[in-house]
Image (cartoon, rainbow, N blue to C red; front, side):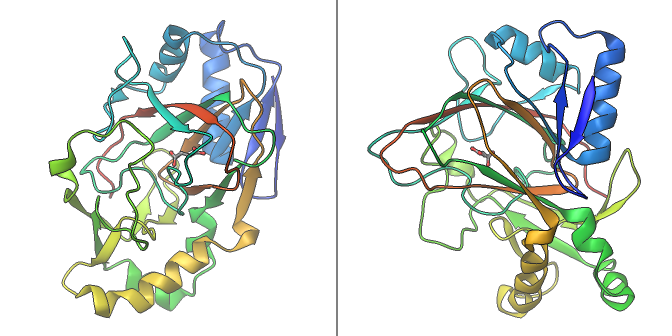
Length: 271
Ligand code: SIN
């Protein structure tokens, strides 16, 4: 197995491995590569729905996605589709997945099934780096704060869930309070855990009071130096660690179809 870093801080391609036939040692090395690089991807993986679920389950119990049904017979595989005639897409904001839950998913797996001829890349940002580059004073101040994360905060007037089969629309006010600085359960490293789509306000402050600092922190995460861009090919499978990354699905392929299959893996309560 070969691990090829994609930038100096985030992202790695893993070569020389067939995910349909993975040994325990192979899995351990993949898990270590994910901890080291935060986002990893594999090209040319031909997996059935069952094999995709089996691979995902090696990282922990699979998590139900609140706002969408799974594909037939596989409740944990969410199909994310943008058709030729649609203009809105799913995930075209910087975010970490489902931070409005008490226990947001620790890992997301995304498998490219059908792609536009160009466009539809996904950007990833390293939120360890975004935290580590803050001044000692701001780190200390943020270390005292919690933030309210909501399923319904969207900076644009859009239905962000439009591209998946919607359900549980009564739960779109779902909220959870999490520390602004999160310690990773496995690496112990600290990261910035607010995002522009779900973080409503700091606990004990109004949204208006919170927004200037929230905007500053989100802009820090979005700095190009902290990012890496994944150009998908069909049968590319990527995994990212939601505890220390954010991502942004580029919506730059109107007129073409993009079909992705997503699985999320249960995480701990952020602390
Ligand atoms: C997501 O935000 O989970 C989807 C990302 C993508 O479609 O590239």
